[in-house]
Amino acid sequence: MDGKVTISQLQRIKREGKKSVGLVAWDYQIARIADRAGFDFISVGDSVGVNLWGRSDVLDVTLDEILICCRAVRRGTERALVSCDMPYGPVQNGKAAALAAAHRLIGEGGADMIKVDAAVEFPEVVRALVDAGIPVFAQFGLTPQTASKYGIPYSAQNSPAAQASAEASAKLIAEAKLLEAAGASLLDFTNSGPIAGAAVAAAVKIPVIGGFGGGPWLDGRVRLAHTAIGYGEKWLEATTETYANTAKAALTAFTALVADARAGRQIKGIIMPTVVIDGIVTRYEIVGSGPPLLMYAPGGFNAVAEAWSTLGIYQKIKLLDHLPAHFTCILFDRRECGQSGGRVEPITWGHYVAQGKGLLEHLRIPRAHLMGGCMGCAPVVAFAVAHPETVASMILYWPVGGAKYRISSHQRFAEHIAFARENGLDRVVTLVSAEGKPFGAEPRGGPWASVIKNDAAFAAAYARQDLARYIAVCEAMRDALFDRDTAPGASPEQLMGVGIPAFIVPGHDAAHATSAARYLEECLPQSRYWDVAVEAQTEDATSPHLLEFLRAVKL
Image (cartoon, rainbow, N blue to C red):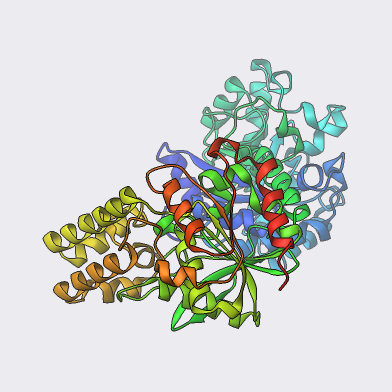
């Protein structure tokens, strides 16, 4: 249904033999989501008292309280029709009180239609509202407000025993026709059941909607938002099938948040800050307190801050559960990775050094410990060579290197260059936009894949480049970064001149050859090598060693 939903459109849906659907909601955010989902109407129910505010009876909700909910839903709704419940009291106090309340719900609350509970007992009120030009959604059957009178608990209203019987059909049809004659635009038949519900829906021309005890035999359905998404403590153990279980998801999320906060980690959902370094945006995060520790992330060409918690060995050893309690950990997305920006140029380890140095300068940190994971070890040693006065110590965890690593890195560039040469750079952009994978996961996307994915202007400029020049840039970058079968980043002569303490932890696979770690041990004069097998690199074993090393070095 296009455009703003109207009552006449809901009535036409019935005439066409189709179904309408509504949602009971009480707040702006749910209304926004429901409106996008395509609900025909949103009903602001007095059930808010029981379901959201923890009250025992819907009769406790006041007019002023329901107005707050109605205004919130109105602000969140553009397309759906908004109905608002008349709370208990005004209808029971007569036509004048009901009219005054309805005018407030329409004028102050922004409702399109007023829902009247126990409407069959007050047909004169329905008629008075309609005569005043106020559309009425009339509720009958076993309603929340009449249930208290009959001594039926609110929680029992959705049980089969509460549904209308075949014997009651004639009476219920008469009630429905009475409300239709009074001018109601829609009917809410609560706890209809399949027999009486179908009979009533066939007997009147206006739509008959059902929530509690309703079903496909009616002209439409309305459901509590919190039931649809499984929101509320009772859903933590519930076995009833619904469309989502927000309660379980929330419990998992809240438990993780508590753990992150108590461990000194950054809380997720907070937008990470950015800084422009050499014309390129760097996304960074600061976690913990103590002496500064600049951390070049692992992950190859997807070196993002989150990799310290989610990637391979780092997920296992949980460094960020321990280091932030003693050090100010400075995490960041390396340029051309994650949410950081980039620029098409022949990138060297020096470019990555400049990013880290610029970040420290932005934070006004003159001297820091440095840590690199995997490929992040290369810019750490290059940093120590270029700015020894800034580096207090180095931790080199699983440094990349070895013949297989160099060969596979060259092969990755070769695949990208071949794809670009055969298909053009516009096809590279199309591929990255469709798949969204970084260079390490999809070589054809190239080393600027993450920037292409996140920055439309960059992607457009990227596609317009001269192909021959671009290929030359890629080849120069490949040769600058992966020029040796040892550990990249600095030459042996440069490393031997670095008088900075280093702690080296070896890896043992095709990308992290143990020989690369041994090479760094050999070349760095103040290196300390932790000779430990990968399987022995556990959470309990690793952090104490790293903390002992860092604490022994004074800034």
